[in-house]
Amino acid sequence: MLRLRLRAYTLPLLFYCFSGLVSGYFLWHAVNGQRGLKTGDEYSQRLGELQTTLKELQSDRENWRRKIDLVRGADMDKDVLDEEARVELGRTQKNEVVILLPDQARNAK
Image (tube, rainbow, N blue to C red; front, side, top):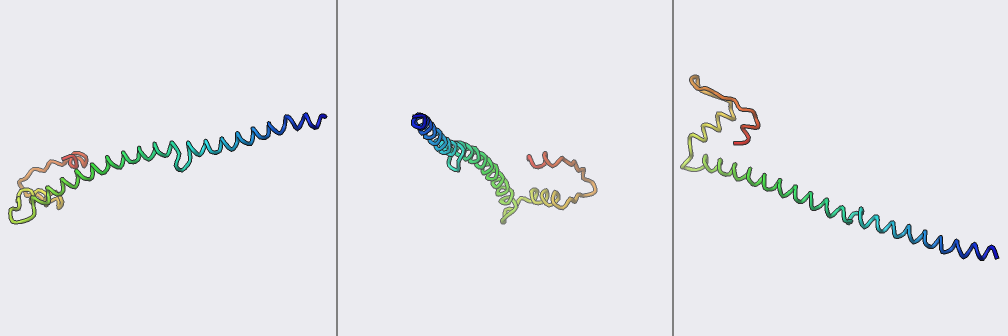
């Protein structure tokens, strides 16, 4: 009698505990797993960062393309060529005044 009563309480209790653990396992993986809800948000955030970086790199490329076009070909802009050569080589004439800018201000141009 006691054995039947004990079995009547423990079997459903064990079943509920086991099903709760299995459900918890799948629920945890649905939220935190490799293809879970949090991963989708992280992918979206990373995609936004990469798109911002891409736009910055495209604008950098356009700036360089403009500078290259000024010094390429028959209609070369001699002033731009002279300015870039002096910046790269660090050379000046005797009667010139040189104003040195910090790297950040020079890159902002």
